[in-house]
Length: 284
Ligand code: AMP
Ligand code: FES
Ligand code: ZN
Image (cartoon, rainbow, N blue to C red; front, side):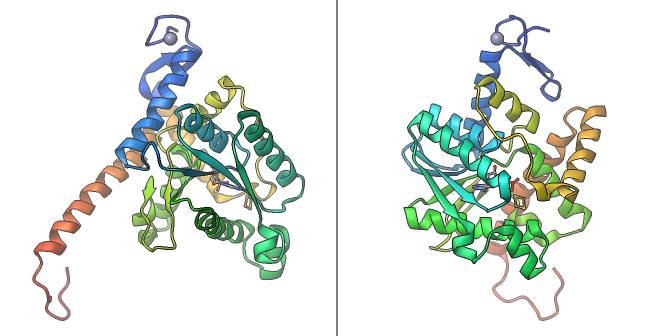
């Protein structure tokens, strides 16, 4: 297998792009995909400070690495969920990453804000662990952005995460969730920071390869509560489809995002050309 760019021996084959790359050219490809995501969705400008939500995993630390290398002004934010050894270890990975690169890392303890660590929150509220955790993360990421003066928060959600979320919404016909699924969520209130996902064009395999080639020390273990989570089952189903039909995952997500852009345009036109009051009971 030869590198598409230089003809040298390839380190990685990307079947969905029908291409292979050597290590330096894969890193270049990866960063170009991030740059394209930032540009296409106008995620942030070159001089805007960015708060990067880091979990200690390959995706968010990989994202932070790309943004630092591209010269963005960044700080990391780690939320300590208080999930036993998993939180201890993932926090240590973020601290080591930030220290080695001379970057600022803010750490927030979820227990300080919610009143107890996530396992305890789950026990007393009887909510599914991941739902209490997801809600706390969204709230605290936004609160930290406001407190530290950042207008935008970047997360490490990748193509597999986004395709699995879309799959779940479609499977349950949660149509109300669809408009909120976007690589860039604008601020809809003065107290809400923008949320962006610059890795949405890159698969989990690609983010793992990037972290490996960049020698990023990340936590490999999943959160202990993720075992048996339906999101993992959805990822497996999509990976099975990807095996027999390379590009399936990409087409599923990007088809939706493109349709969505068109719907947004059509919606805008409809709203601006519609007579101000529709007849009562009129079905649109
Ligand atoms: P997850 O929800 O675990 O799939 O993570 C998705 C993204 O949310 C990660 O790539 C991070 O950007 C962010 N994130 C997850 N956990 C944390 C955490 N404990 N602290 C800060 N950011 C996090
Ligand atoms: Fe939130 Fe696992 S990271 S429950
Ligand atoms: Zn090459």
